[in-house]
Image 1 (spheres, one colour):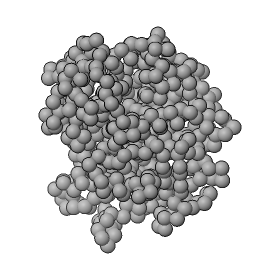
Image 2 (cartoon, rainbow, N blue to C red):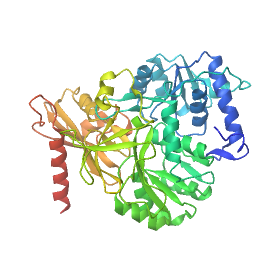
Image 3 (cartoon, rainbow, N blue to C red):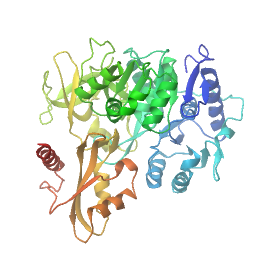
Image 4 (spheres, helix red, strand yellow):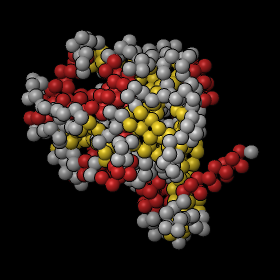
Length: 504
């Protein structure tokens, strides 16, 4: 933290529900102690710490303490099942795991199925070393030589453009470049009080909220989970000025009658990302709260944001994700020919910049599929740029489902469905949903007696909450190409037509 000494007495991070506070001086001291505690237990440069926690102030201590000694943070979705946690721990090669008492049952199961050597817990729980034990030292540790361009600092997991979850290798340079370049847009500053609600395990929360809020020298107020009334109460109590949100939360602010019961007059700016936000909704929440709102666009693979609307109200464009940030090169390319397209022509968005990942961990094939020989990242998102270079996202070439900004890979759910003895074939697609953005919908061919609800309940028992199948349709066959590939686009078009005819 480059301003820890200057801002030593200023609150850096506050636990919203309890008011527990660390100043910048306290936070820096604890980061040093955490780093020293890891070193004392044999953790060294290149080792991996799994962080399996909701948004609490100690997330910053663990993440930055690990970074200080050249360690790698693999941030784990707090909604994951033990099976999913175990996969990430094994795939990343995590040495230690940090969690909270409420997650201990699942964390212990996952750790036992992995190579984790020691588990730490915030507080106390059987089978884990207390977090406080890591801080019981003078904060001294040997200096570590770090090559910012080569050494990893974060290993979040993303489904990428297709397929199952993959470790995204992000260097110190990647994260710092994205944070500094995005911050240079000028949306926020040290006088802001930030909302730390969106999960820190996700690239949006990790880089553009937690680390960028501290980089600005502002005050971060964390929330471990979303509950609308508590969120409004915290916004009022702490006089939040800057809200980083996703479209479902913007929708709640625009439509819920509860909003009128709280004083949100200090909110001056809302940033929305992770999924497209309609122009009408954008304008509705701005009118209701009397604040500015802007959209941005990014991906885990680019360490956060690549496109952001400028903060000047006269330069913002509703419905757009803005132009590329500084040092970001963008192209719109014809999906079939690979030729560059002109203004207002739709194609796949390609991105290049100092924030682009090194690649997917232990997966050269997936890396080569997404980053070409010239270093362009093929985003898998379809959009266009207008005459002034403002980008608009209109669809996805990739097959991911975005449920409340969480990624859901259809292939993962399809593979699970096919293990059920009553199911002969299956396909999963995104179905539009006003609150969630999209929900997973399954099309299933049966070979035994079972109801749609029974199938959905069976899946729900084995996956994280956001991966649950919310809609299911029994069909006679799944459309496929001659090579056997599921033609999801056929099902997606059919679903959209069905919804449109039903709304008329």
